[in-house]
Amino acid sequence: MSFPTAAQADIALLLEGTFPYVSGGVSSWVNQIIRAYPEYTFAIVFLGSRREDYTAMKYELPANVVHFEEYFLYDNFGPGFEPTARAGNREAFALTAAMHEQLMHGSADGEALASFRQIAREMLPGGSLTLDDFLHSEAAWEIICDHYRRFCSDPSFVDYFWTVRIMHQPLWTLAHVAKHLIPVRALHSVSTGYAGFLGALLHQSRNLPLVLSEHGIYTKERKIDLFKSEWIRDNRNVFQRDPTELSYFRRMWIAFFEWLGRFCYDAADPIIALYEANRLRQIADGAPAERTCNIPNGISLARFAPLRELRPASTPPVLCLIGRVVPIKDIKTFIRAMRRVVNRMPEAEGWIAGPEDEDPAYAQECHDLVRSLGLENHVRFLGFQKVDELMPKIGLIILSSISEALPLVILEGYAAGVPTVSTDVGSCRQLIEGLDDEDRALGVSGGVVKIADPQELADAALALLGDPVAWQAASEAGVRRVERYYNDDLMFGRYREVYEQALSASGACR
Image (tube, rainbow, N blue to C red; front, side, top):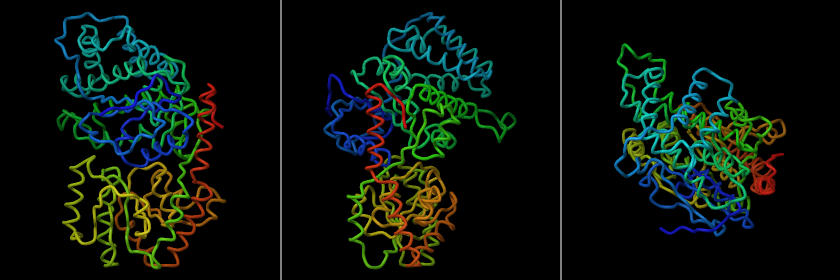
């Protein structure tokens, strides 16, 4: 596959595990943003896990993407040659040891961040902290052994050794990217994590303004992933293990991503959240409050409003979950809710419209659950669908997720006249019930339910589908809310100001 290349660009977009390879809300938003500013040229740096996880692009690159690079952080571990004995730069490794001491003993964040910045500089090509030394030097080996003896509560040294390697080796890949990326005038990362580390490294090494937009809070989402990850070992026996305590390796990974986040927050200005609760979470995680602000998502009213005229006279008894078939969307709760819905409303259908290739094992479990509940004639897996074609055919948007930010699909549904029933995650309560008195005066545009509660989800959906007056009131409230607060003109105007300020080397967000 050939990608566009250029000698320079206006803005580098740093994207981890999203556009253009993954469909979904964040990718759709990135596509919107790029196309909204044809006057700017974009360079995209895509970061993924392994090449095999990203087989085909789900989005066509807009014309103003003039440069594209991709890197797969967990492919090709090791140097590709037979290593030779090496002492390593002991002064450089002494810096890393000092930083870990600061972290372990609760030193002030400023001191630890100063150490983090210094180490990041030394990881750049030409610096004193090289990948070969990290992988093969006596100095690295001695530090790993010392930290294992002093801090690790898991008895397996082999698992500790490989966890340290797998965790840190991608940082040298990112240091290489930072060194060789084409000249750009500003940086925009759409998460912390590895993309945020790259952004902070570019900011530090090239003195470039870094804009950070977080749809969900990366560290929170990684914690959810790490809590349920089966590949993270816990080798303690029943007598060594405290059932209330996370395994040491899970705690290592969580701390690692927390400090990548702090490094990014230290460099970014502005730091943008979608809604107030996430902005406060950013501050709690180390973001300077004065650099934070909220810019909600917005959608195209011109695209979705005409779909209201295509709706049938009576509301279709169709509950539609639009999203990836992955555990964080908790598809199983929706399926279980459909059993209760169908018991009360036999003509009802549940549609699951989203790709199943991200987690095939989970997708298969969802199919099996449908069969075990006898819902084969009522629950349909549609795969990826065009939202515009779905909206006139459905009665409710359903979100059963255990984590969300500010879901575009709710706003798209509102603009098309479709109410929502959602779990109480992210900004969903704000979107359904309103943010403040003025917003709440517009009316309630659906239902909010607890996480992982199929009965409450089913009952909220039935209350709307079984009451045409309530459904119509919710539909009209959603239309009013999206038109007043969440249209793309408002969002694009705010981001135009952000880009203009960044490109003029002023990172303030007002």
